[in-house]
Image 1 (cartoon, rainbow, N blue to C red):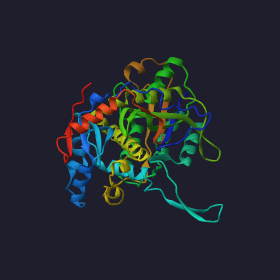
Image 2: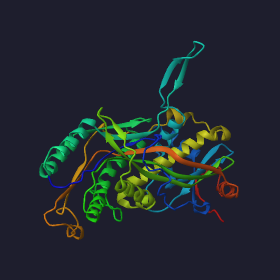
Image 3: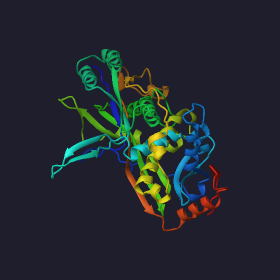
Image 4: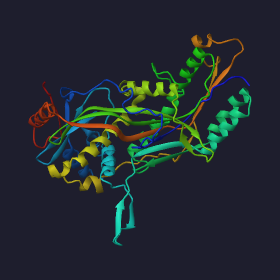
Length: 436
């Protein structure tokens, strides 16, 4: 059998999954981008009360309220300010080139944060009373290959020639993968956006959708092989998007997201004899390098027109953060904002999100499929095959969330400026200029 390398990957998109001891996984602080948001970069404000009022009047009419649904042009939410007159003011940027926001994402994430989607369970307490509790599941999606498919791939690796391996691998990978939404209704906007980002990450990581300056896992494996002279044994790597390194400034209930990053995490796994995935406690250096590079470059990648789904994913993470902070800081009670319509009546659009995906695979032969500069580096008569198969996950939980009181008055200055520059009490949105 000719030497070859195999790479199998799967993953899960979940809001929060705690790392078990001994897992050699990346953390959200690894490889964080340097970019931070300063108060003077905030240039646009949107009134939540105005958005709600506009959409309430629409009564669910299909073509009504599109300006409000897109937050009157706000492109990125960087925090919020409390209006004592009974309003929540979203602050952020109206930068050209960024994709629009979707108010449905906020509604869904707020309902989750306020346990609207948490199923009720009952138990008998120590005094014999029947007690109802809600079980909260973190929002997310998962597209996972079935264990029997991975087991079949492992058998193929162990019992075939290289040519048969390259031929049969894609056939096995085409078997359906199970797609699930966790914590929020399947088919809502956040579910659809996370699922699409999950699906597209497969093609980025294996090189089917090349991204400039972000070598695929296959390209990295080939480069390493050509440097070392021998292929590694390969591993099954789980990737998932997670809330990255967050640095949040707070003052009197007002918040500015100085950092709110999305991170791509990874950990090596193996298939147990019971047909379940388990962490190996080891690190795949090639997978780790890919994850780190994508995390560092994420703010730039999501600005690229053909990678707009990454911006959609960033929006979902940010709305999840906004919702959590609004609830944890008791912002609605402090301002007197009535959430009844948001939680019980606001219509949200549903998308046709499948429950099964066809497996995505790639066979990468060397030297046939390699770029010319890498193809020339080989040894006479040696052939290598790299293969991928599986899913990816997204984790919406804050793995690192630092909320610190702003002792320097920056958030207070932002808040005063936002309120003073409001052109009228009924203004639905307005430009703001925050000086130093």
